Image: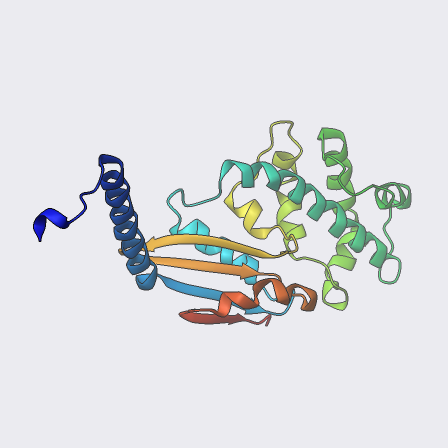
Length: 225
């Protein structure tokens, strides 16, 4: 009977060994995946999901911060946050307390999105921020929608206006950019792998992240207070 069996060729033996190796690796990865905690951040737009996500990166990522590409991209985000929120503040000065330096206020209101904050523009922003009318309107910011982070950025404008500016952890944490699609980060907490997903909070984004509910360990619902 033994003489009737067909023996494997050398190539077939190599293919069989590779197949077994791949199967073993797949089982190992599947077991590791089963042990991973999967956390899904949900909440309405502007509820603070992305801020919580960034705080987790600062606290628990290996670098305790952001990647070089995220830092580079953060330069433009910080510039845009300052310009957009300053324009909102100046626009509301008209219905609250007008700026004393109306010429400078009008000039800054004409700034295009994406403008670079250099030393010259930084000085103008610093000057209008110190304007008595602007400061009086800022005290009533609860009457209109503007980010509180503007005050932080203006306190740091001398650093931000430098040619070699790169945002630090606090700059990126306090900046706001709309989340589109799904952003994932993975951490190792005391030997436990944790995957966290930040998803777009707008209604038209939901079809992009609904599949994230598969095998989720916990949902963290974030609400603005």
